[in-house]
Every structure is written in structure tokens, then in C-alpha cells.
Image 1 (cartoon, rainbow, N blue to C red):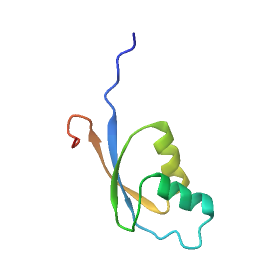
Image 2: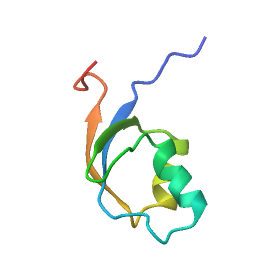
Image 3: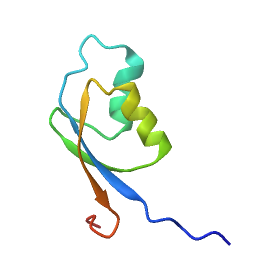
Length: 73
């Protein structure tokens, strides 16, 4: 049986408005859990999360990486 790898978390801040952006970018921002500008969300560092960040890289900022044992529960 495979052991579960300790995942890291990413703290991401939404810094630029999506006014004028295509609908898919708006949906990506909402899908990441953002509700308002300058909000900070903590997401798992997975390939799907990285793909979402790459899609809206000009709208968000990665604040820091947090190891799982340092992350808040």
C-alpha cells in the first residue's frame, strides 16, 4: 500500500480585479475559493491547484508555502 506523502499548502492572495477578464478566469478565481479582493486562501499544493494558478497568474500572488505540519487545522 502506498504511503500518503505530506502535502504542502500554498497561501495565495487575490490582488488584481477580474473586471474585463473572460468568464473562465472569473470561474477559476471563484473555484479557488476567493470571494473578495485581497483575500488570502490556503490551498493544497497539487498539480490541479498549480494549473489554476497558472491560468490566473496575473491576478493572484503566492504569499508563501507552508508545510503540512506547520499549517493550521
